[in-house]
Image 1 (cartoon, rainbow, N blue to C red):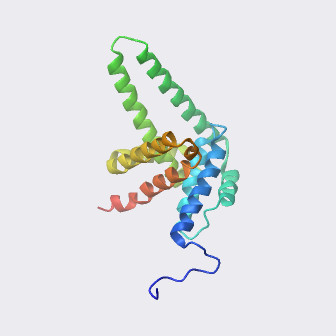
Image 2 (image 1 turned 60 degrees about the vertical axis):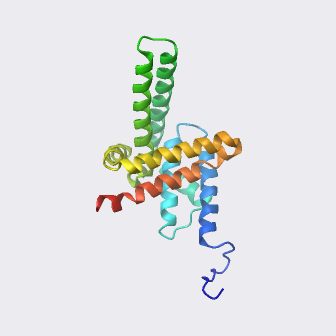
Image 3 (image 1 turned 90 degrees about the vertical axis):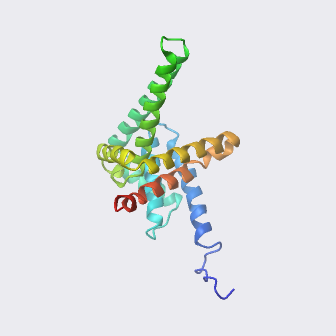
Length: 199
């Protein structure tokens, strides 16, 4: 017992459990912020920024999340959301056409799935980049570069998405908590990027 770290005053569960609880509260706040759909990129980007700040000693709370989201929500964020929504609808339309029995439909479906997966990885990695708070084109450009240079990180992003989808499918109420762990995973992949680049 003498080797255990003493908790700070008012700290009930310790730093790891506190971060876990903060991540869940930020996840719930992100879910609420994503409801208009076109705000999804800004909401996820803000969650990543707030969770990144937790590693720098800043509080990761729902209140700080909504304050940051109010400060940064602008026309560029809504435009990014509109582009993401249009891309998702186009992807679903392509898959529907492939399922309708078009010539070379299997090949078309594979190509569409590959393009959609690449776009998803780049989009999510862009949300995790600090540049997404002020400049989406730069964030997307650097995320595309990272997706190619850091294939392991891109695989981790896909694994995080698959885990999030699986959790939501197994227990629907978990869908409301999924954005928090997803944002934490995206932030972790982005934070490990400088370590990878120094190798």
